[in-house]
Image 1 (cartoon, rainbow, N blue to C red):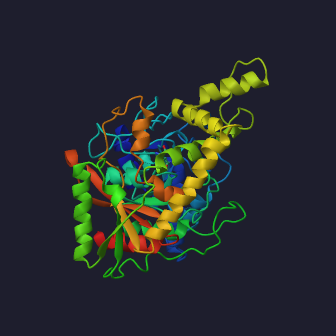
Image 2: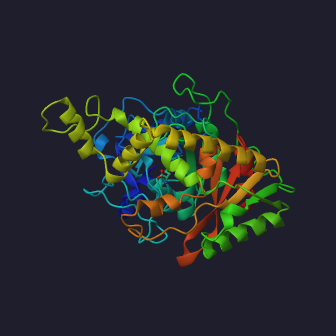
Image 3: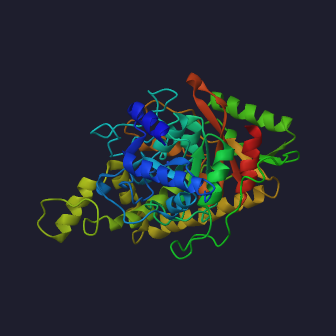
Length: 456
Ligand code: GLN
């Protein structure tokens, strides 16, 4: 723990950590040492971990990257945090992310990283003039720069897979409902899912086995399926594994350098005895408008709780209750969050609900059905995580659509609720890392981790 705290201090300019509490960390570490000495060690005893600042934690402030939650201290730990702590993990601190996990570049955080007094972008350690990806940007950077051995992230539309790909690490988003959402500050509840990010599939398997499992009293969408030991099947042979290659993931929009790295990884799989099977996910393109209707709709509802009454920011000067709501929300939320609240409120409003929201829900179902047809022909699906390598800080400027379009390959799996992961595949333009995305059918996390491990 001391080693990683010191590294985090030495690399504050990356902007990965938004909260540390060395006293609390070292107290946890000493307790872990005592359990090891007493012979009562848990499976993760003494392992230092850091959490995306979207999970609430008792020992550290929880902000979700927002001014709205500046100074907020949760009275409880998120279920995922609690489970990891009960297995013996030691918390190093909280990691930067896009505000309420809305973003693809970690340029939307309103929180000042540790060691600074103003919000600053998180930097990709492979090239500090580039973005790390988002929204779990701080998480990916912490692992890539060895400021933590492993971390948690969350993925609503790609926020574990895409930053993992951009920073050259491994990350997995399990089947929707596999890990509890209790204590995960909500963005889009039908999509949000927690997962580990680490150097290898082996490390991810270790963490995921602890993070998953039912939590029905606290999260009604958590699935009543017992946790699995994902480490057991890591070395299973993959001869004969049918890997589906969706034509729509390899079209004109895919940068040639990314394509070359992905093709290289697929060749490795062929050498290991896997078979590449051409498949089609015909509604891939529609996943962007569908996601950017459904996710903001759910966000507009979830974020209505931030009204200045019960917790978080409250405006100082106001004339009456409505004025207090308005000023609190105008001051507390950043531009991207406001944009999503407006889109979400619009698509849910009377007269537009059928035209946008309901239609998006129907297409969401069709996208899920397309995957089931594909899985009749293959065991896992492989393709790129993102169309390009990590772009330059500020490159997408004030154009949110440029960020949205870059989510095209991660959104389909999210909308279908499928498990997906990113595993390092090679390098592209500027020597930047490229990830290979693996998507599995429901509950096929073990198979994904097995396939990823064999590549590593
Ligand atoms: N980039 C997507 C968005 O901005 C996904 C974010 C996420 O998965 N949290 O909504």
